[in-house]
Length: 93
Image 1 (spheres, helix red, strand yellow):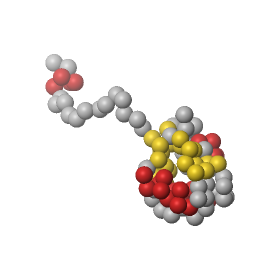
Image 2 (image 1 turned 45 degrees about the horizontal axis):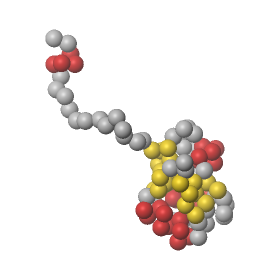
Image 3 (image 1 turned 90 degrees about the vertical axis):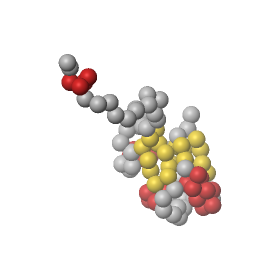
């Protein structure tokens, strides 16, 4: 009997799972005021590895400068902190 039939089957892996490259708000403080932060800028600053990655902004840390942040997804706390700082949230297509 083949090995894959002898081993127990464990867990489940969804084929529709969406993987994100995550970036915390505290990492965005390196950019100047009113900068448009998009995938290209994040890659240039080595915050993400690949341009084809989906990017999600998480709300860890404090944002000190108002930014226009363009990403595929945002956590609720990240949206609130960006808006409270005077920035803008832009969802990518």
